[in-house]
Image (cartoon, rainbow, N blue to C red; front, side):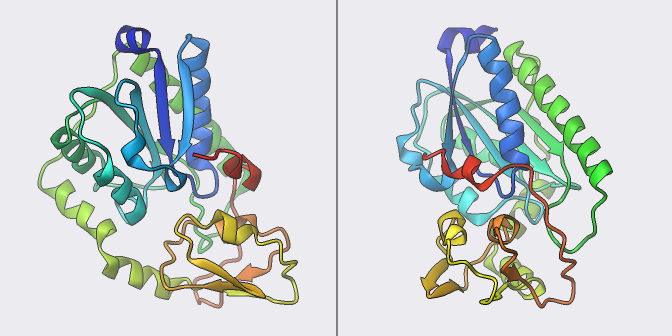
Length: 266
């Protein structure tokens, strides 16, 4: 088990929209813990990256978005403290392909003094409500994704994992997800509105938003910085959040409960 046995602790920093990434993190944590490794979960949006313990193994987990990942996740990576050989691995969840995260993230972390030990991308069902889903196919894909997560954790323990890099092209694709222009376009394709008659004023959407884009003014009020993580929509208990966008299908997708996210403080 090499470095995992020697260090003995994994700090797993993650962001999960509606559950795919957290489900993968949990499965990997089970494998690590069954092999005597202490695993500590941290929500990126509730963690100061400067507080990362450099004596531990660092795990990073997040969804792919716009060929890379969300801008606030990029911000977390860029704010990680300078290291001197701290081992780091990554895992992302995606519905199709990325192209703009694995290589650029390795490059960023190496420049900050980390030692990349493994990267894995795991296909899971999409959570964007612009497509109709097949529950049976989605469940099969989830189970296959969790099996891949389990094998990846074993590969990390046995030092069989790799973290590749595709120069130039991946660097260019990474800029797409970091560009505010890309996200302004996405917001035009899918905008949210609140059905006040259905809202029970639980404020769950306010607590779940990772960038504090939802404020409270008798009812939820959206700002201009939504990154379409789907939490507010997927977890609303009374379906009070909807969209008038032409592409909106009304489909909801989640693999966890809202409390599974909220109970992890940071």
